[in-house]
Length: 77
Image (cartoon, rainbow, N blue to C red; front, side, top):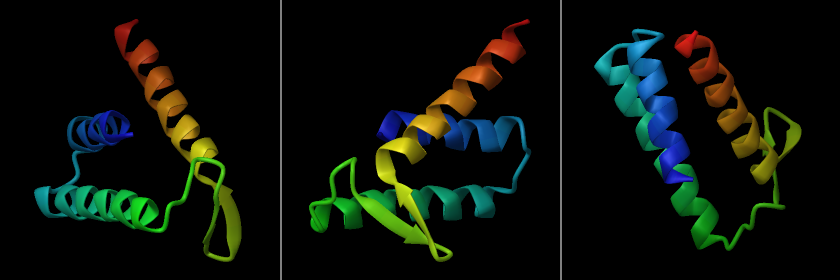
């Protein structure tokens, strides 16, 4: 999971050109999320609520990986 977050942060820096403060905030929030998930013994099948909607952690991470894979494939062309 940490590798996926690192790739996502790199994407935000290089492709989106976000400021260092914004990047730091994203990184901190994502790592805090992992820490809280671990403390609460949430597994990948656990549902979390975001803005009133249920999300499966594994699906969220898979979506992030797929997005990065698609981006990398397009960038290589």
